[in-house]
Image (cartoon, rainbow, N blue to C red; front, side, top):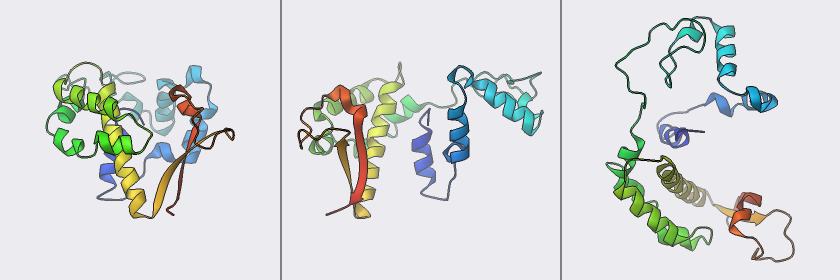
Length: 190
């Protein structure tokens, strides 16, 4: 789910049924079965060659060159970056997304630091160049809130549980850097 494709998929889902091939258990279990040292573009090249050699000759969006053999159909007038996410997020989409990235709402979850989110929002509005990471995080926060609100409409709630922590019910022993040991669960609302 790189390059903010998750957010795009959630928008498309509002208008039609959508299936992403990487969500199929056969695909991701196959990919995870391959050693990481070869889990790269060679896999795509191999699959394309098996499907139809002509597909492997199409230019790849990242390089405008084919993965295998001679490139057919490359165009020199295309931008390397096929999107303008930072400009869109800090520009025309900012106000709409800002409604969802409310620092007070996030602070009320007791999961997020509202001050950090407030600072991130200021950075997003003022800068539209440089690292893509802050834009990605900001949009993921908006998507998280939309998800939480959708769960609430469906009578569900999102909870966090610390894995293997039975000593303190409020999980105060957990440090922020231990976040990867938290389990997210969706339960019926009480």
